[in-house]
Length: 498
View (cartoon, rainbow, N blue to C red):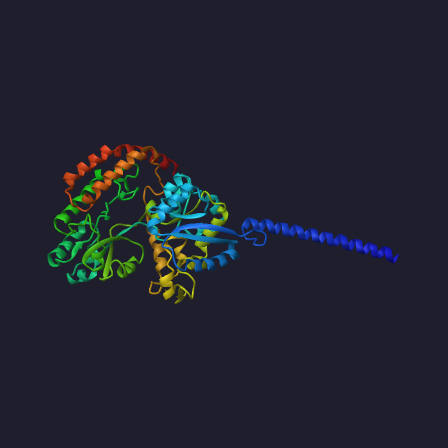
């Protein structure tokens, strides 16, 4: 009897044990599925190594910072990142070779001025990110101003993630305050190009060694009411108050009036006679100017005073209201390569760039205690090692609203950025990306003519009433009307879908 009872109890124990093991196995399976979907099961998954090409001068301590970053990323998303930086002057060429060769990598910097974003999309080098953002990058949309994503959209798909920084494009007059005070000039009356004339005349009459208005061959006067949707070096635009048509900027009344004013200023000696071939940098740094012009972001005047305009106290006045266009929204972007084997993991890393303060500050400033020290929760000072051995172009990635500021920066810096971004108006062409494949040769000819005539017209060297019709005729012979017709067709189609 005892033997039978013992055998029965033993059988029950074995059955119970089997049931418990079975339950345990099912629980483990469920956890494995869940964590695999979320990308965080470090025991089951092999760590992924991501290759990231980005712009900037390679830094001595980049490897040191990368090691610290990868320790954190392994714990956070079970991945590491191999950061490969190419210097500013060589980035374009090197990335063109990488893309053309079909090299396998995961992430790259592309924008409106380097490794052209739109061109990379056109040749299929970047993948659409919409689904990846929804599944692995939910924090991005919560933190990134929506107009940035509008600018990053081509043919209805998001192909890049812009840096969350200043959104708008705004020109600002930079005024030598010492000279303004000396001659009791009311800075508040400085606004349009025409409003400068009496004050430029005062400086011209009384300060023979000062350039009243410092401009150079890269300078382009602001033409009111015009959206230069292909950049301000090409005379193709859309009017803000008549946004249905693509036009030749040179044929507008607004442009003619600005060019007349510039020619008058040139004749009066307000602009250096060699402006079309010289750089203005040395004049501005030495304080040998009265009014200059630059593109603005909140508190840029602090940077300008300590940099390009460092020898004078400066004041600023806006040339126009800020507006968001493709150039401003695409000024710094990161995209995922079509050759990436790990797009999901890459998006997880991208998500951290917009949501994780430790990650973005580590990449931007280096290691705390080594490259910088905290002054308070918002401000840091760079160490000597940080100044000499680690400097990353912070504007190029992620969410700047999560980054520290250098000591002395106002506490409300990012609040001012938010106000600035929310004040921006939309350019009519925001999100419109032309396809030039049908007019490629003609577009090249138009660009060549524009490069030939721009500086003389923009800087007032020539009389626009005489020279502008000749420039328009040259552009027509090059085929600008053909380009406008093709772009108008595309623009009409884009407007109907948006």
